[in-house]
Length: 115
Length: 114
Image 1 (cartoon, each protein chain N blue to C red):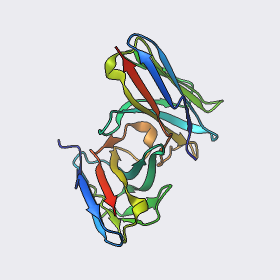
Image 2: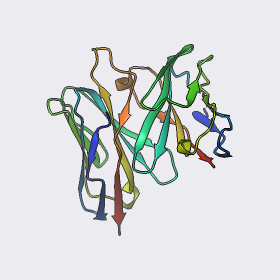
Image 3: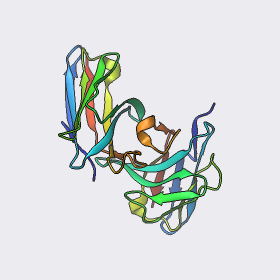
């Protein structure tokens, strides 16, 4: 099993450009989520999904869109990148949406720089 | 709301003990602990459920006081491999069915020196 796979690992954008961070898991996990990590801020939840076709907002959703058309994939879209979106992005999945039941499996992260 | 972790950073010599605290202003269903090494993804350590259960993982253990909404992570006889940033994640109590959001603290950076 590959686990949680994120692409790309590194990306540089100009302000106003759009892009999609890809996330795929092969563990048949019900729950998927996106976090961003900034120095001194910890991990902050952007969006999450409790199953195919179901998504919801986390703590910092502005400027990001998500969709979950399949159980395996959960892409994160930046519609018009801003320098404030410079961050490291982590995708994480879990077997069940009731998070007390098990751990989050994290991807390796995607480092995004917006100029 | 993010849980509050303390201390923000700690430096230990190999073999010394450390305690990392995590405190929430809201009632909690569970507390998760993760460790992240520089440039890597967070790695799961343990989950504690409401009920005050204490868990252990080698020389790393944790407790959860649900009345105080606090959890503590204990690292005994620390090893060089324990270095990294430790995060607590809190699952706020909304119902008896669990919660779909995990809110992380800002982390505690632990440095172990020989």
